[in-house]
Length: 162
Picture 1: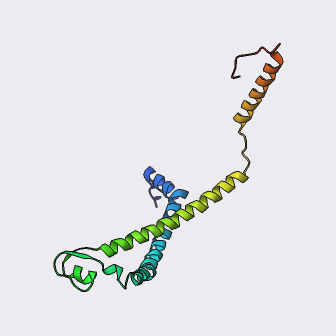
Picture 2 (picture 1 turned 90 degrees about the vertical axis):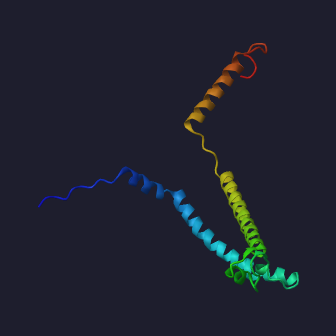
Picture 3 (picture 1 turned 135 degrees about the vertical axis):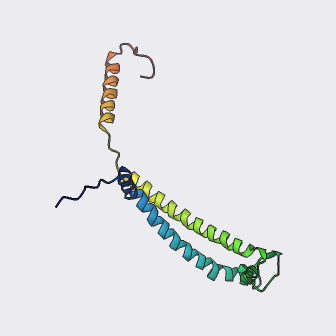
């Protein structure tokens, strides 16, 4: 029996696997899933809690049913009017979307602000470590300072800036 023909993995497939397994791609995927779940929560918050309170405050108006019929027959609700084939401007739906956007933006602002503060605290705690190049440059600087201080007679020395 003859051994099977070895199959080589294409270079593009190796590159794709490396790309997918990078941390940033995985983090992006996790963020996308969490963002979708968060959007569902915000949608419920706006439609089930905020809009009824706003509607109550302005006289019992149902926000989702605020619309203008451009052409066609107006019916009892936005959905029924659209089902009837009418062209409508769904002003209430647009306002709902703006409220959702503002809530999500506000939440993201606070998350980013907290992460930035956390990152600044971590940076402040970690003492900067000098690289070998920085150490060598510091030694050269100190040696030049020592030479300039010893070589000056009567206040004369090298040009300014050294």
